Image 1 (cartoon, rainbow, N blue to C red):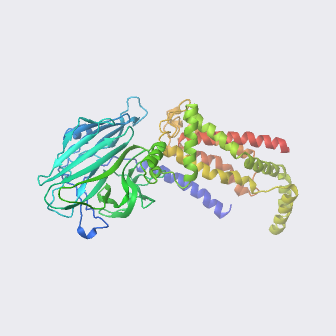
Image 2: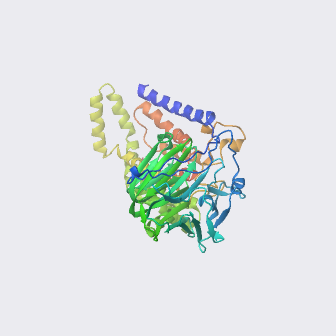
Image 3: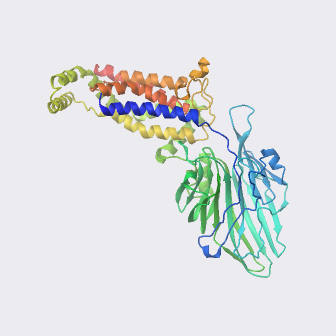
Length: 562
């Protein structure tokens, strides 16, 4: 056997061993981390003026920190409730902090009694996650509202119909007013007003920040999770492993947005398209990260009133809704909060086609199957030509073997005779690979859609498939009751996919090289295990695509007499 083939066998074996080792040795563990003060923010435009922002939260240490559950943490402060058809939670009046938000329409698990997904979390819990907005100044004599400021509230509840007004007077002639509104989906409006009767002119800088404690790598194998935003017209995805404690990534921009993203949820502040802002992504402490902005300064004369407006999104990555906000709120590339991957030009249209089919059919699984059939229809001419060539190749296999035997010691003559045979029989040996090359971007695009689109999360199919975004749960260990290592614990659909790949392979001409033929024979097994733990929706798509290919190839073979 050739050395390169031995190497390939060894690589496959070692890959399987590595996957098993990761699953067994490094299970997911909950980590409790410290919450530390937020680092300094400086305006790029006014760096020398030393405009800074720091958290006023109490510094907890391992000896004095008390980790509380969310319910107990919420009881520590006065709050005003938030409610619409998609969100529920509360704003902490101390500091006017957004730190308690639940997504009413999304459950944590498939369990009927599962609680709603918790997006924002208060301080004192294991993973605090909150947003704040306010003002900065380079004049230390000006008393500004901070994280400990107790705001006076006008209103009983924040709803789409009942906005809130918060007021605070600094005792030196400056009144701060904050008007908070929300729409029926996930967007909050924050209007900050300053009434200056201090007897002197002042200069203030609007700011906003989203702070979060999390232990994720910042970039999973499927989607980016962590700090991200669009600044200066470009998407920035900041991996947590790229930042040391106290390190930051800083950008100057007009317009855009920044915040934190997970696979299905995200939070972000939006930036004014006409004013220059400094956006910064920082690791402020161990497992603690912050996205923040400081806008251009606003000069407020004595007796004058100044206003600053921004928006805060906190919710699900509903693609159609993000596109709508991008247009109605003029937010640059807001849809890039969803990680569409390299094949954006395919992934996003694929989502809209699937969404259209789902709304028409009423079941995402059947929508995926119809989508697979439509793709096969689109690629029918290319596949037809390819299968015709493959069928002819199979038909002339005896002639190929005779030439190989006759000229096995003369490689140059062998190649000449083979080319002459292909020319005579009008066969293009490379054409059989064309459908596979076409399917590669299609496969990765659909893979992305099934992993990023929240519309597919917890979407049912027939039988035991209750979540098309998750692997097939009807595994060998589930059916037999016998413990099976996770890498080999395949579901029914992956095994069906492997079977259809095997049947399709049996219909194709065998490679002339024996080593290549052995590797070719192993491909269905390799793909079965490789895709065995992918989203079940993707495996179902691949299985049906194989079935349609078998039918098409069988018909062509009958036509050419192979």
